[in-house]
Image 1 (cartoon, helix red, strand yellow):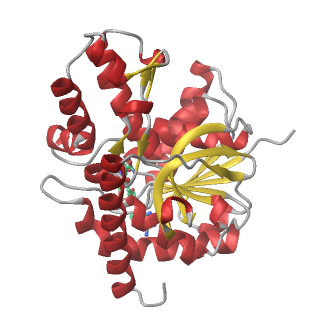
Image 2 (cartoon, helix red, strand yellow):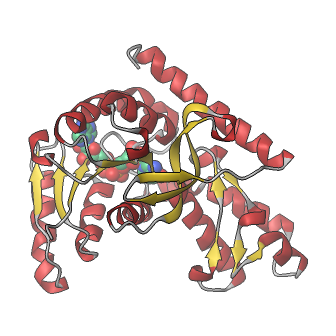
Length: 319
Ligand code: TXD
């Protein structure tokens, strides 16, 4: 069977990390694309030269031409400008919207059958715009944020409880970052919901609230530490989990920014919800009923995403 072809649109910090992880996992051949000349070629060659040591077989091609992504099975989009300290995700909107227009046109022309994972911030608006610019089916264009947000949440919880990260599950809804909605009653340690763990004395409500806040600010915490650029190891790992579920038809239940057409009372917006990802792309959107407090947080999140999409439409009336 021929290897899958994975195109990375954007070969910066996340793009390079994606290429490395994809090689280590032998998910397929990689095409690194970027407007910067030499960067995708150099990173591709460097990673290829690690393959004999690591023992994986994959081709790594670096390119500045969209034609090279022809017939890719998966496209992972990180093209754009990352957040700098003090810059909000929304400041990025204008610049990255233009980038999505170019990327959408490239994917439409050369890889219209691909499963597209958008990572570029502000995520929920960029994935919405990318779907429109590319014209690809809504089941095949998703945004990566929830896997990362829930992974951060799981990590902090595992640290607090002194248990393996593997035994902690977390359930998050809503937009990326500040308006993320963690559902503590659906987040567990080996199936025991967090509110029960509070009752059992494993932690306190106050500590849990602090962990939730740290998760929401997870991106900013890393930006503050790195000083230039934003997180890339965990974002890349998260997108690879989504790509793997699609390519291997694993049907994993993963929180993704997915197109909603009435679910959760939301129409024509991308918002973070639990989805099933398999070879049909987003095969199912899992709709749970929310209690009052959760609904309030979710509404706030949806309002923030709506605001961003409206700002996009003001800049690009063709959306
Ligand atoms: O959870 C999430 N979704 C995120 C999102 C978590 C962390 C970071 N997140 C966002 O991902 C971040 O705010 C950025 O918008 C993207 C990519 O982050 P990365 O750290 O990889 O940024 P880099 O290193 O600046 O890489 C971006 C590359 C860089 O090499 C540019 O030359 C290239 O994008 N670029 C382009 N490529 C193709 N086409 C165009 N037009 C273009 N413009 C810039």
